[in-house]
Length: 357
Ligand code: CA
Image (tube, rainbow, N blue to C red; front, side):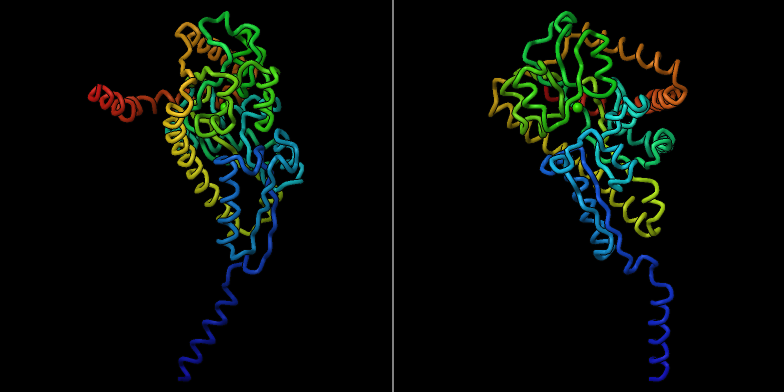
């Protein structure tokens, strides 16, 4: 009996002595999103992240999520996280190309890697380190935040039959793809997600690209622009979690572990949610909206896009050493990874397709 009592004392004492440093430490953060709170599955990732860390910390670490309907600064997330108004953000890296052109690589680039190749590059090809080096000057940490896979090329009011049809076209298209289109004579703009439908409806723009069937159909673009082009410009769009560096450094180690684990989990979930959503939306689109005309850009137009993209990459690389460093890393990794993609995923799909034709 005495021994049991003594044992209990030891257990209780050791609980106190070695109990996690974070126990009882309350941390309340705020996260600003580029998206409205109801924009699924993008907004689902940070909402689930907050739920996970709250559960993992027994309610001591909370993150309040604010959508763009509240903070009204959809494209101001990097500044707000850098400035400390928010400890975290959920957005996309290529929105910051005006601050640093190399940020485009951590979303996606035209004719770049697909989603498997790009995640392999992030986690096993030096991508995470190159991303952090690029974001160090903003005093923020950057993490993957969910992926859309191959995006559709966008909604056009008129069919694109030749390069001449692109000249003077007003289009919303962000990132490096916008620069490619600008080189081909398109009047390019980036408009926050919440204003896309109105801009297209009012004729501020003639065409736009958003994501893919799951997210596009809900926006109603098909009602005003019936030509739906297949993708070339965003083969693996990665979303982004941003964290203010000072806030991160103050976090107990255990909370850092919870946060990084939760970010990785919701990132994978978002990719799965969006893929499944597009599977359903694509099927529904064929039956419910037969007026949508699915098109692929003509080969000469695609060849011109590819040429314009390569020349842009080389121009930027010549004047920006970090851009060159990341470009070389992505090019080398893609060359290596594509050999495996071709013989595994691509060959499997191709063989299956041929068997059933
Ligand atoms: Ca897009």
